[in-house]
Image (cartoon, rainbow, N blue to C red; front, side):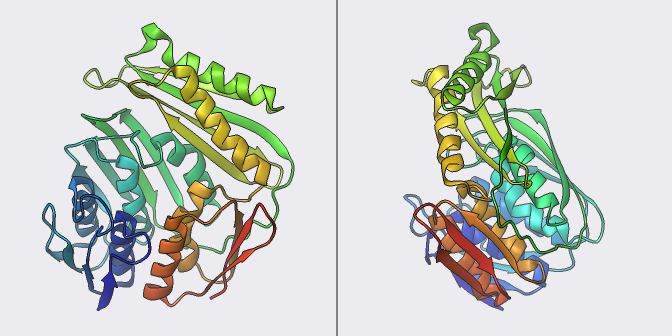
Length: 345
C-alpha cells in the first residue's frame, strides 16, 4: 500500500490528485493523510472530492474517507476500464483541475474514455484556464503519445460556476520527452473569451490590449475573439496566449477577468506573463512544467526539459513521483534564467 503524507512539500490538493492517479495506474491501494494541510481550509473541498470520486468511477475503486472536509483517505483501485463517465462539481471548482487529475488514468484505460463534467468552473483562480489545457497542455502531451481533446459546452466562472466541458481520451503508450532547445520564435497566438459581456466588448478589449502590449515588445500576435453566450447565469472572461518556435516548443500564459479589473489590464497581464517566459527561452513554461512531471515519470527512458523557475508544485510533484514510482529526477540550474529538469530513471 502507498502511504502518503499530504502535508509534504506544497501540502496542496495536487498531491492528493496525483497520488490517487498513480494508485489507480499502478493498481496499488493508497492511504493518504493530512490532505491539503497547508491550505487555509484543509481537507477535501468539493472539487477535490469530485476528483477522487471520478477517479474511483474510472477504475471501480473502493474509497473510504471521501467526505467534505476529510483529511484522510483510503483508495483501493481495480482495473481502469474506460467508457463514458459523468462528474458534477456543483460549485465554481475548477473543471481543468479535475481533468488534470483524471487524464493520467484515462491514458491507461482499456478503452477510450469520455469524461463529461458539469456545474463547475472552466476559468477560475489558482487553476489554468480551460483554453490553456486545450491549446498548450494537450498539444505538448501529444508529443509524449497522449491522444486527447477537450470541448467546451459552457464556460463557467466564480462564484457560481455552472460551466460544462468534455474530455475525450484514447488509450496510449507514453514515450520519453526531450526538449533541449527553445529555437526561434515562429508565432504568437491566443484566444480571448467573454461570456454575456459582448455589449461591453470585453473579449475584444482584452485581445487588443494584449496584442498592443506584445507588439510594443516586438511580438506580433493573432488572437481569436470569442463572444460566448453559453452560460446566461454566470458572466466572466479570460484570455489565453501561446507562442510556438521552430523546435516545436510551445509556451503559454493566461489571465482572468474579474470584478474591479479592466479588460485592458487583463490582456496586459497575460501578455506580461508570456513575455516573462519568452525572455527566459524555456522549452516548457513554468505553469506546464509541474503538469508534465507525472507523464515523464511514467514514460520509459530519459526525459528532459528547461523551465524558468522551480514552483512549489514542480517540487511537490517530483517528490511524489520519486516516492510512489521510484523515479529519479535531477534538477540543475544552468544559467540565471533556466533550470534543467531531467528524469533519468
